[in-house]
Length: 319
Ligand SMILES: Cc1cc2nc3c(=O)[nH]c(=O)nc-3n(C[C@H](O)[C@H](O)[C@H](O)COP(=O)(O)OP(=O)(O)OC[C@H]3O[C@@H](n4cnc5c(N)ncnc54)[C@H](O)[C@@H]3O)c2cc1C
Image (cartoon, rainbow, N blue to C red):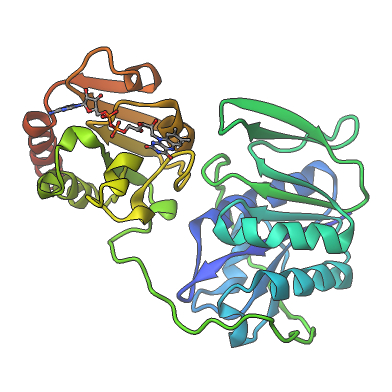
């Protein structure tokens, strides 16, 4: 058995969730007494040999610039071929938008059992059992993979990153890039300081903000914390904020280290997208708001009074 970890990247840089997947894959390799390697499709500005710090011995790279944008059909074909070339039995991805798009195709091509949204290292004591979240994060399932080849996608922010010493060997992959059936004609990037799915801290606003004209207090706090902004669904439905900021069951699902909910009631559909956050802080004027049950810290108060004070305090701390 050997473990191969997919390296996700954008704009020339390796994504944070990749470091978690690398650590996960390397620890799994240790657990089953094998080696871990990384697989990079496309080109990055980062030093790929430094991925050795996360426990991989080799970085297999297909350095073709046409692969700098993900085409799931093309990628799954190449990754399946790469897995056969390097002899990988366990493939690890991050369960982020690229990972979600690629893994079904990879698993189908390799006739592999697939577990998406893993949250812990597999139990390999008797078989190969992977713990994953189900029902929008409200429960866990332990899923046994019985196929020879196994594919796992790891929920972002559910596993630590361990950075040690060491350098990986960069190995060029010799695989022909198949012609894609789709062509990316334009890319419209979301503006903002920090992409929502990659953000360590997210400041989110709900209907309690009363209207889009009041979003300055959300943005000021986000700016002070170098955080991304998000919102509840009715806020996006009312066009107070763009839809890409809507988090929850029907929106983006996130797991930042800190989620600050301002004037959001905490409906189950909202919680489904944010309840994997490490720490949740809620500001709501209604002490009975359901969100307080899911909160680590709560302030019962008016957002228009409380939030500017928090922002001031954060700015003072930084200065
Ligand atoms: C199938 C389905 C899918 C859904 N998917 C999603 C989803 O993905 N994401 C999502 O968010 N919702 C989703 N919803 C909607 C969800 O059920 C709630 O209606 C929604 O989350 C409520 O948004 P809110 O908390 O912003 O607004 P409200 O429920 O109106 O709550 C506003 C909160 O602000 C507080 N407040 C008011 N004024 C102040 C003030 N001045 N200071 C402090 N607090 C104040 C109030 O006490 C209240 O708790 C879905 C619903 C359905 C049926």
